[in-house]
Structures are given as structure tokens and as C-alpha cells.
Length: 375
Image (cartoon, rainbow, N blue to C red; front, side, top):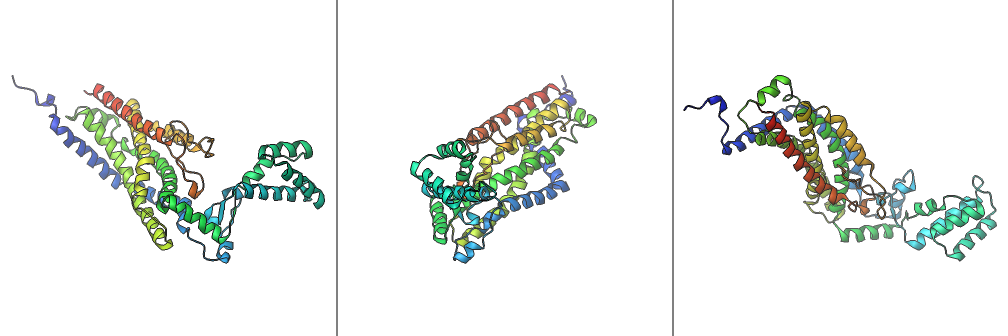
């Protein structure tokens, strides 16, 4: 019997060919899309405004240079770029005592005389209490509230030249300059590429989900795996172009700063941070667009969901030790601490593994849905 040509399915070895064809088509469409190039510019500007200041870090050569460093609006925002270094326990307590004494004798505060303020602070020193105990004592005896925040403000202080340089040198012995900068880069690049992908990837299925195109695609001799795989890789590679450009630009700037300032640097730190902290986030966003486009035959319902997901992830949660912890199942990894405190937030590694597993599940479901709707 003769087979009907219209019912011929592609041979298994042709699956890769069809997947490549879909991938190439999507990349060409994106390269022709002006939103991609405008987005690259916006992402660059956003990252540079947020992380570019760290590219000015250098050893301090004089006390005059230290005095010229910009002061933060609030002391809690101070960093090594402002000449601030962590305080040890005795420094923090002494600076806190001095501030409490100043507030006690200030006219806008409590109006005690200098002798009275000195006596109160002397009592605190003599009792050798913890910060929490000091807070409770002042509140009970003098109606002085929130002493805890005063001591927290002095967890760092403006250092002298030798102190600042010694701190920089000590931290650079632990990790190269590029290791710290890579985390700040991953922080802001992940933020901006995440929101940009929520916009750009909406175009991935816009054409294909039109009624006439959608029905026609399901009659074509192309396997579900080839089509879905090509679309997902097309969206992923389009965002990898953005990520790659950012790595080239900021990797080059980081290397240049390291050489000029005499800091140790490694060329792979930024790409490694990008792969670990950003690529899984982009992949799951592509897969979310895919599954929603197939369920509703329209990718646009995914837009508000992804933006809400990004906002949820960006909020973070209080961490017991670091002061910050990522949200459970977050699609973003943030490093909000000071430059040399760029430790990986709790739950970050687990979240990234979860995103890879979720991507695999969504991809498999999308393939299944496409197969069931074939004509």
C-alpha cells in the first residue's frame, strides 16, 4: 500500500534539524527587534549606575584623599567606597556611648547638662551591659528609646588611611577583587535582565499563537520536542546575548580596575557568577512563558504573573546572620550587603536548583500539551 505523503512524520534524526531551524528563526527575529538593542542599552545603564561605583575602589594614598570621599546620606549606607570599615566590639560600644551622651545633653534631645549626661554614660560603662540590656535600661530609667539602633549605626566607622587600606588588603587575600565585583554584578544584572526578559520574551510566542498560525503549526511535520526545544532555546539564547554583552563590558572594566589599582582579578569570576545566579532565572522565565502560551494560546497572561514573581523575589526576607535572605522559590538572587560582605544569601543555592527542576517540569508539560493538540 502507498502511504499518504501528508501523514509522513519526520525521522528521528531530523528532529535536531527542525529544532535548529526554529532556534535560528527566533534568533533572527530577535536580532531584528529594536526592543532587544534598546533593552541592552537600558540594562547597561542600570547596572553601571548601581554597580559602577565599585569600579572606583582603590587604595587610599593620603588622609586628604580620604576626607574627600563622598559621605553617605545615612550611615547605614556607608561602605568601603566612603572610607568606612567594620568596627570591632569595643569601637562600636565606645562610639555608641558617645552618641548617647551627645543626645542626652542636646537641646533637641533631653537637655541634660554635660555633667549629667557623662554620669549616665559612666553608669552604662560600669555595668558592662549588652546592647539589648542598655536599650532596656535607658528606656526604663530615662525614657530613652531605640538605643539598639544607635549601636547598629556604629557597626562600622570612618577609618584612617592605614585602617582602610589594611581592610582592603585583608579582604583581597580572601578573594580577588573580581570575585566581590562579580556578586554585585550578578545582583544588579540579575535584577535588570530579569525584568527585561519579562518584556522581551513576550515576543517569543506572539506570532505563533495567532489563530491561523497556531493551527497551521500543528499540521507541520515537526515533533513537539523539536518545536518546543527550538522556541525555548531561541528565547534563552536571545537573553544570553544580553547577558554576554554585559559580561564583556563589565568584565573588561573589572579587569582594567584590578590592573590599575593593583588588585588581584580572575577572568572567569563574572561568567561563573552569571551562570550560577542569572541563567537559571532566565531559563525558568522562558519556560513560564512557554507553558502559559500553550495553555491560553496567548503569552500575554504570563506578563503580570512574571512581574509579580519578580517583585516577590526582589523583596527578600530578614536573615538571621547576614541580615538578608532570599525568598523561598525566588527567581532572583540579591547581594544587598556591603561590597566586601557579598556572601551568598541563605537559600540561594537551593532556589537555583529548584528553578532548574521547575524549568524541566514546565518544559516536559509544554511538550505534552503540544502533542495533545496536534491535528
